[in-house]
Amino acid sequence: MSDFLIIGGGIAGISVAARLSHLGKVTLLEAEDALGYHSSGRSAAMFEETYGKPSTVALNRASKSYHMSDNGGVLSPRGLMLVGTAGDRETFAHDSDMMEMEPITVEDACARVPVLNPKTVVQAGYHTAAWDIDTDLLAQNFAREARGNGAEIITGVRATAIRRTTAGWAVDTAKGSFAAGLLVNAAGAWVDRVAGLAGVAPLGFTPFRRSVARIPAPGGHDVSAWPMLFGAGETWYAKPDAGKLLVSPADEDPVEPQDAWADDMVLAEGIARYQEMVTEPVTRVDSSWAGLRTFAPDRQLVIGFDPADPGFFWHAGQGGYGIQTSPAASMLAADLIGGRAPEIDADTVAALSPARFTRV
Figure 1 (cartoon, rainbow, N blue to C red):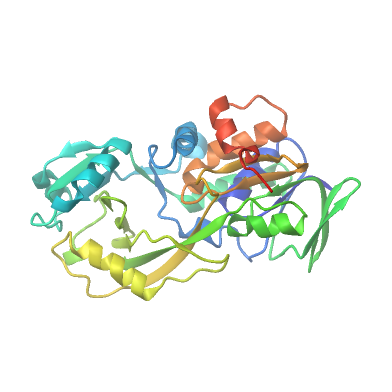
Figure 2 (figure 1 turned 135 degrees about the vertical axis):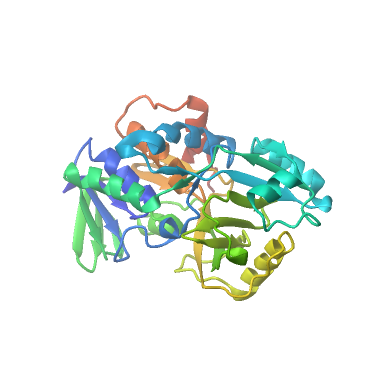
């Protein structure tokens, strides 16, 4: 029997496993055959402190030092550029303020990204404080820490039933039953379903599909030093990746929990929005995929004990912020579970607590 049983082996589950492994015996169950199979393995992988709601930004900022230096760090410079058309002025101004952009000239923007079209791009902002995250290394670091402290990480085991016992919980799978005193629900898009199996009221999470296309480097350019590009209103984004360019329509289509696939029409619409801002046409798509960004109703993460069942802990609703918030979010979970005063401020703890939801 374990002290802590975690359901979900994405970045949320594996980071919590690493933190809790210092407090007791941990077992992590992942339904797929590999860790980080769904959203965690399909992320745009950026660290940008100002991205998200205030509680998310607080977690971002509390995670920065870990990303920068722990285990040698997982960040590399990228930079972020916001571009807008003549019709985007109000939206551009809002985004520029929220993301703490420095205004730059269109000429400067085109010097940084030579395929930008000065006939359509009439405003631009930039900041250097944005980094690529080596997501594989980050997950490996957490997994190594967890296993080094005796955690058992088991893949290919899907929970089929969850039962209350006198000692805590028992989770039934096709490979047997696993028991623990505390159940941590880190099941990504499936968190409400896991709660239902455990007899805990769901909180109303919604998975949203986000699609991505990988295209050849525009015009044969070396894109390695280009910043990540955002369209005003986040109607599209583009990011260098292994000598090519990732382009996303930044779509948010609500779907059931699933192994998501990109919608060709949605991708085409997003690529068209990107093409309006550049001079080089997209002549082919090398590959495409989709991931699920799962949000609570108020789009803030959910970290804390269920108010109606203190043996059930939510670590959910990471949306598109799970990787960059993982160091601080997992530390908050460990602080709460371990009965320690959280390192992060009390207002953020309250904003993330599942107690904020009213159930009927």
